[in-house]
Length: 431
Image (tube, rainbow, N blue to C red; front, side):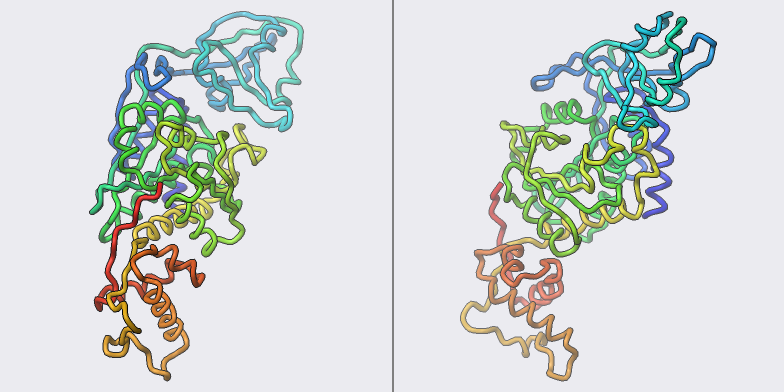
């Protein structure tokens, strides 16, 4: 998986993406090799909830020419050099005028900032503070951006893996930033690999929905079309962002605070990933804001590593391949896979022998005293499971009574199901 993650990262990295445009579609085409996304085009001018899909933006090139004829802030060198969604321009300007259209990031003088202007038509460039400081204040500059803003469409993608139940688990990420590693490519790559893990499950109780959309406006467009369905069927969901840096995990809760999504994520992190922290829902963040907006109020949290805005390279050219670890990205996929496995196991269980202790020996489930300690530990897990399986508690609650890792109960659960000692009941929807 690690080599494949890096291979697809390298293919996606050079593409200039935005909330619309050919770069976005080219990125989807690559990701469709990993996950069979169905793409939807929403025309410019379409009203989507309280928003309107903007004109489509595409760019070919851009640069600043200094008084001595040198070209700087060249789009061909780094696609962050042109403000994302910049209007086209071809003009001669003086230094003071240029200064109003150039963005730097003084805290990191060697970094090029990421700046957008989706909904206000203006032109602009981004460059490092150190490079800006070298430009002479005398003389005229030529500014050139070859870009178009025309009626087009916005593209979002989704894929559904059906399960035995119409209840859905949602995984969502965004695709809209230009060359940025942790705050862009880590999410779609993790989602694509997670899709493959869940698709490989021999059977699925839940239906799984995978969404890749431009941040904010893309999910708003999707909710405008599918929000009623999602509100009726989503039992748990997660926004996948900042998945690739080597920091410890952070889980941001849904507004429900104790939804199935929140309980499963907290449990997996507590028992399997040291150093993880859990934070409450807050409006600063990603598309969980849309899923958790008052009218939808879906049980959607977000599992990430170092959160957005909490690492200095965020929204700069330093959020690059050197910042991410493909080992860490693969571990994020594993954490999400663990959550999906736990959701699949998490049912209300009822022991079919409710009066007295079941006879484990005649079912071949009781180890002899000569067997190793591990077998007896497995027996203790099994007895704990059967003791609490009264049809009123789900697996998460049963595990927390011990406490133990719920996924560690799987062998005992499978054995008891095989011998008829356990039966399943549906988990009530609490979100």
